Length: 224
Image (tube, rainbow, N blue to C red; front, side, top):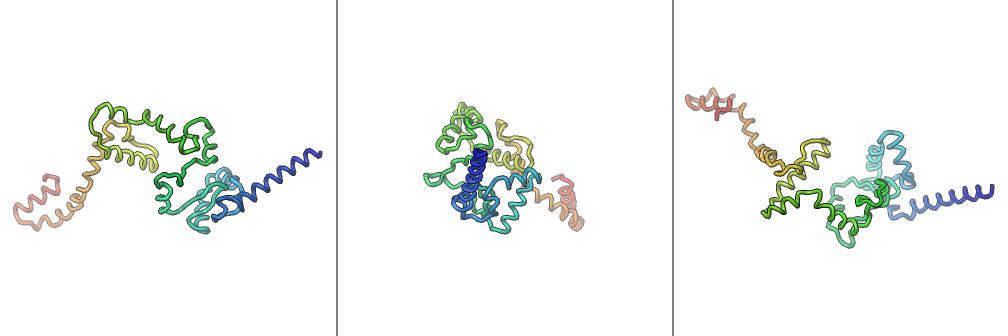
């Protein structure tokens, strides 16, 4: 009986210490947000698991109440400010570390894999060692010819946006020429304004004399 009481007391004491530390002594304690969100991740779990992915909308309400920066979990901040992107992706330096948080690492449950590498200085060489196996770098190196970077950047941009917005589609980065024909056609899209003028040509075509009227009809019908 005494052992059970002692164990229960230790559990209560531990929870109290953790709660006090998270609310008052955490580096994130100065940021606004609901106290329950600072206390435990079970608050987010309730809205996402029990209510079916509703924590996103709860966070939206937090921003309306507390401002652009809110504390949504004990170790997580949510920033709703486009200007913060420049700070988040600022050039890396000794004072600007990007070590992954333990909450992110535990999500993957693969502690020995590169994706779960926490320290930035260790993750970089691991990524570099594998990177060449997942790109076209080796193939282009064998050609010993200059490499145009613009098609690759266009392909990467298109693939990222396409995957984010649509979830599927043609992968330009997987093609040898980065789907150059697609981008060539897209770059000619500025000529579409000619099509918008077709109605003007049709409307005023009958007012043109002789040969000019025939040319106007040809333009509208695609003959020129």
